[in-house]
Amino acid sequence: MQKKLRRLFLITELIFMVMVGAFYFLAGEQLVYKSTKSPIEMQDADSVSYELVNGRVISQDFVCEMDRIEQITLVFTKFYREVKGTVSIELREGERLLFKQSLDVNEIPEQQRLFLRIVTPIRNQRGRTLTLRVYADSFEGSAAAVMMNQADPDSQILVGSKVVKGTLCFSVNGSDEIWLGRYYWYVAAALVTAMAFFLYASYKSYVNGRYNHLVRGILAVYKYSFLISQLVLRDFKSKYKRSILGVFWSFLNPLMTMTVQFLVFSTFFTNDTQNYPVYLLSGVVCFSFFSECTTMCLSSISANARLITKVYIPKYIFPLSRSISSSINLAISLVPLLLACLVLGVPIRPQALLFFYFLACLIVFALGIGMFLSALMVFFRDIQFLWTVLTQIWMYATPIFYPAEIIPEKFKFIVRLNPLYHFIGNARTCLISGISPEPSAYLYCFLFAMLSLVIGSYTFKKTQDRFALYL
Image 1 (cartoon, one colour):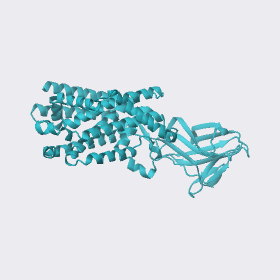
Image 2 (tube, one colour):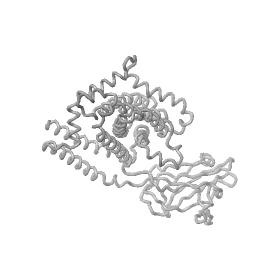
Image 3 (cartoon, one colour):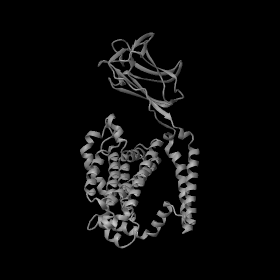
C-alpha cells in the first residue's frame, strides 16, 4: 500500500504543477488586470451644453484613477432635428494626444449613451490630470451638443476659453493592475512547494503509523471501493427502473427544463443576455445537479438504516456514493450543453476548460451540504420537506433564468453571499464569454466549497455515533 500511496501522491503533485502552469496561460489578461472599482461615473443630464459648431471646442479636465483606460462614454443630443458634420472626441494629457475618434454626427444616438471603445488601452496615467475635448465641423442650426449636469458648483467645463459651471455627461471605464499577475510564478512556486510538503508529510505520517484525515480517507475509499461502486450502480438502477429511455433522461431533463423556461422568459431577457439559451441551459444544468445531489444525500443514511445497524461501514460512504452518482449525471448533462454551444455558434475557446474548476467547486460544495443534511435527517425527519421549500427559494434567488444585472444595487450584496451565484456565474463567464474571471473569483469559490465541506463533515462526524439510536 505504501507504493500505491507514494505513486498517487506523486501523480497528484504532477497534475497540480500542470494545472498551476496551465492556469497562467488560460487566465490571460484577467490575471493581470481587473475592472476598476473607481471609474469616472456619468452624471444625470439636467441641461445641454453649447452647440458643437465649427471652431468651438468643449473640454473638461479630470483625474485618472485607474491603471488602464479602456472606454469613454458620452451622451449627445441632436435636438431631434436633421444634423450634419463630423464630431471628434479626444483625450489628452496636456498637449499629448492619447486617443481620438471621429464619427458622422448622424451615427450618434439621440440622448443615449455613445460608447467609444479604446482598441489599445491607455496605460500609465493613474493620478494624472487628463482632458476630454469634443468639437465638430457643423454649422449652427444643424449641430449636436453634449449633455451636461450643473448640480455640482465646484466642477467646470471650458467652452473655448469661457468657463461654464457644471460637468459633461461622460464616464471613463478601465481596469486596475492585479499584483498576482506580476508575481504569479513566485506564488505558483510557493503553492507547488506547499502541496509537495503536505503530501510528503501525509505519506511520512502513514509510514510512521500516524494517519491524518487525508490518508484515512484515501485508505477508506480504496478499501470500500467495491461497495461504493455497487451503491452508485444501485442508485442508477433505482433511478431508471422500468424507464424506457433510461439514462437518456439525463439528456432530456435539462433540455426540457431549458425549453420551457426559454419560452416563458426569452421575451424578457433574450435581448439583455449574451447567448441566452446557453446561459439558461448552463444554469439549469448546474442547479439541477446541486438540487439532485443534496436531495439524494439527504436520505442517504436513513434509507440505508438496515445495512448501517447490522454491519460496520464508514457512514460517510453513503452520502459520498450519492454525490458520485449525481456527478455522473452531471457529466451526462454536459453533453447537451456542449451540443447547444455548437449549434448556437458559441465559440469554444481554451478558457472554457476553466469551467470545470467551478464545477468541481460546486460538487464539493454540494457534498458538504449533503453530508450536513444527511446527518440532520436522522434526527429531524421534517428536514426533507423543509429542504424542498428551501431549494425552490434558493433557485429563484440565483440568477438562473434572469441576468444578475437586473438585481437592484441595494440587494446585490445579498446575492453575492449566495455561493451558487459565484459557481454558476463564473462558470458561465468561462463558457460563454470565453474569458477567465478575476483571480479573486477562484478564491471565493474555493473557500465556499471548503467551508461547506468542513462544516458538513464536522457535523457528520460528531453525530454519526448516534445514528444507530435513531434509525
